[in-house]
Length: 166
Image (cartoon, rainbow, N blue to C red; front, side, top):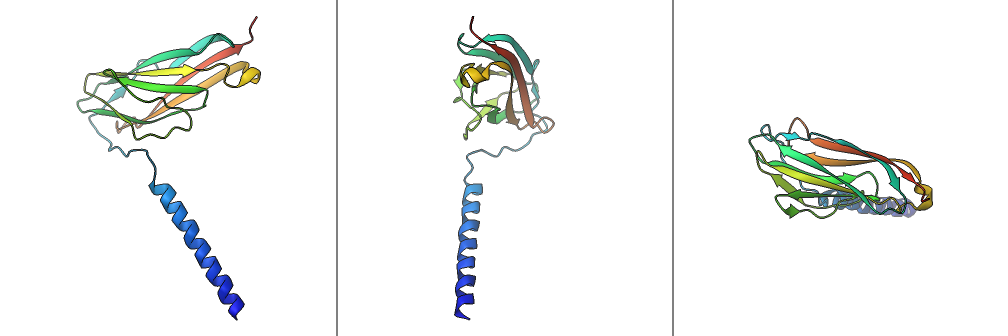
């Protein structure tokens, strides 16, 4: 009888510890929660880019996208992620530059784009990050959460072909 009580007690303590850990991890996210808006409108003329051939030892390549707020309320940009650690992204809003974001980045940063204004999304790809096994076609995605109720997730796609040095 005592053995069953000990096992039951041990099981309950284990479940409490696991449940507490899950609660703490889920509540400690550094991503800010933004409220959707009917009047913040995000637009981008281009959301895709092809670098073409990228020399393996030619250094980093970059691309800048323009994100516009065509609405009448402030557009908020947050939770910026890249699809690979070899790629980083940064946002510039009126000269205020965000930290660099990558695949595993967590940040409480929120960019605010006033009505009629724009932000610059700067994307940098490092062709040597994966070493010689990274030769060949690549495709990288950048995702951004917005408060535009009609476009809560903005995604940019970049591709190219990493080529061997001659």
